Amino acid sequence: DAMVIQNPRYQVTQFGKPVTLSCSQTLNHNVMYWYQQKSSQAPKLLFHYYDKDFNNEADTPDNFQSRRPNTSFCFLDIRSPGLGDAAMYLCATSRVSGGAGETQYFGPGTRLLVL
Amino acid sequence: GQNIDQPTEMTATEGAIVQINCTYQTSGFNGLFWYQQHAGEAPTFLSYNVLDGLEEKGRFSSFLSRSKGYSYLLLKELQMKDSASYLCAGANTGGFKTIFGAGTRLFVKA
Image (cartoon, each protein chain N blue to C red):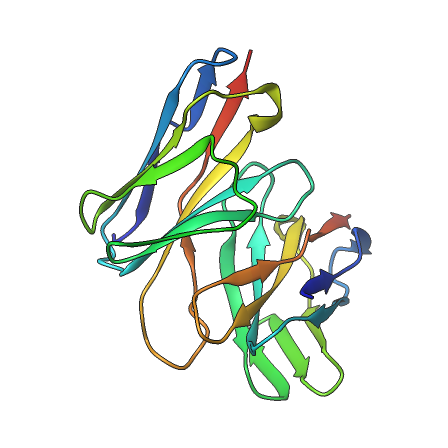
């Protein structure tokens, strides 16, 4: 089945130690997104790629970076995780249909714990 | 500004009907989504409305009024597995940005 895969499902890191979260998709969608979601809060968009074009949200901290080496893969790099970065990180994809709102397909998420 | 408002929590009984309301203010509105999110899992798509009116899909229906900036999700014949958060999300024109609400946690009791 076509899907969005995130690895690992749970990630533990130390305060200040760089960490990379991975996302891959078999849907061949143009757009990939990274969201941060804290408990009982809305998913917060960090950035998205439209093909190779990177779009950063204005309020995304510089501590968060992303790479998309090809259509299928996208990575979230947290350069120096702080305790406040502990959250669920959701990867999502959407296709470009033009005109209509784009349904997003989410991966299962990676729950990040910062010690 | 852009804002999505929905109730924090609701409780309903198995077999009953529940309506989850959402009001929104988004610039460049291009439709409204409802997603279901079980605890610790990713959101999954339920519905998308871009025109006014009611869209029915099995036990779930979604309504939109663009002039009022208002939507609701109607769940019929509630089942225990419907206990989840329901996220209202507004789509914007001119891009791919979707603004999510914080979600309404629905508890279905026997």
